[in-house]
Image (tube, rainbow, N blue to C red; front, top):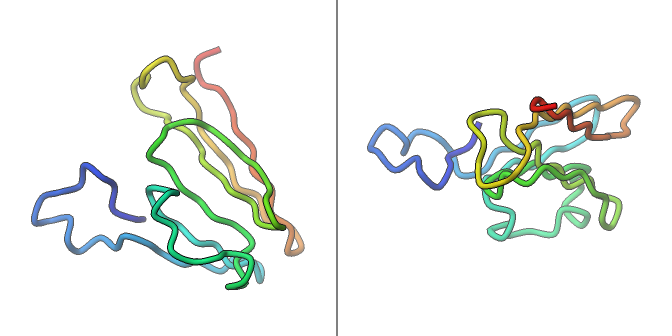
Length: 103
């Protein structure tokens, strides 16, 4: 869990801006706003960067790193699809799957 841009109350100060997870030997960097990424994931050994903010679902690989935004499963935002994402890590390989909920 990481703090989002609308998490501004005193309660939110306990929620980190970034987080790091390791699953099956794959390092995952989590943040809310991709433009605030302050490191080079490939140089730092991360295999995945998970982010949100834009609500635009996306799974793309750059420089060997999977950049994954699951989109938004809540009320429709703008004209974007309602989606949920699944990050799959198998044998050290990560892939992201995005499923539309508003078919």
